[in-house]
Amino acid sequence: MGEAVGRMLASAVGVAISPMALIATVLLLATPRGRANGASFAAGWTLTLTAVTVIVLLLGSRLAGDAVAPDWSWWFELAVGGLLLLLGARQWRDRPREGRVHGPPDWMRTVDRSTPARSAALGAVLLATDPKNLLLAVAAAVAIATGGAPATGKAVAAALLVLIGSLGTLLPLAAHRTPRRLNEWKAWAATHNTAILLTLLLTLATTHLGTALSGLTT
Image 1 (tube, rainbow, N blue to C red):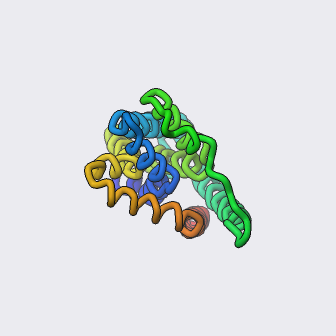
Image 2 (image 1 turned 90 degrees about the vertical axis):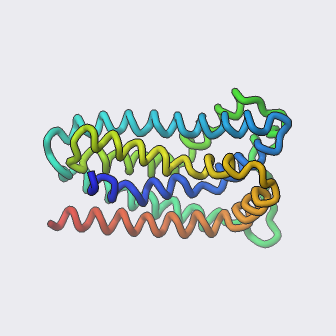
């Protein structure tokens, strides 16, 4: 189990570090039904991450069979590293430029009219449609599926993946009684969004590429 957890840990942390999820949670907590909306958003995010993890884990385990770290898993890891580099390049290309103003996403314009159901849907959408989040969730689940752990070990590692990957939405809920701190988090995430994601993508790309090359050459 230790190997499975070790291989998926960086990707799980990458899912958790999602500035948009943090900003969305803080904004929803400030709405008239703040507590319910924030909790629903976190539930939508967590349940979607759980669904992705379970589906990929089952498919990956079937493809791996009794093999530990089959060759295809290293090629997949190599592909993940390459895609993360491409996402990093796109993040750099689309970075805010002086004199150019980017409007907020559509969901931000209507966040004050959110209901728990719409908040849950928003959490699911932000997890499933963000290429970084989806790619890292799949990569982490594949690492667990091919890590050679027994079924119980895989289940524990999958639970840890979901828990760690959901921290970006759960921590603001725990701090909802300190609005000043939440606003500071939101401002920091909004200000440094590009730098955070670019650094994260390049770091994780290097990690996945290094792991893949090591596995393919041993």
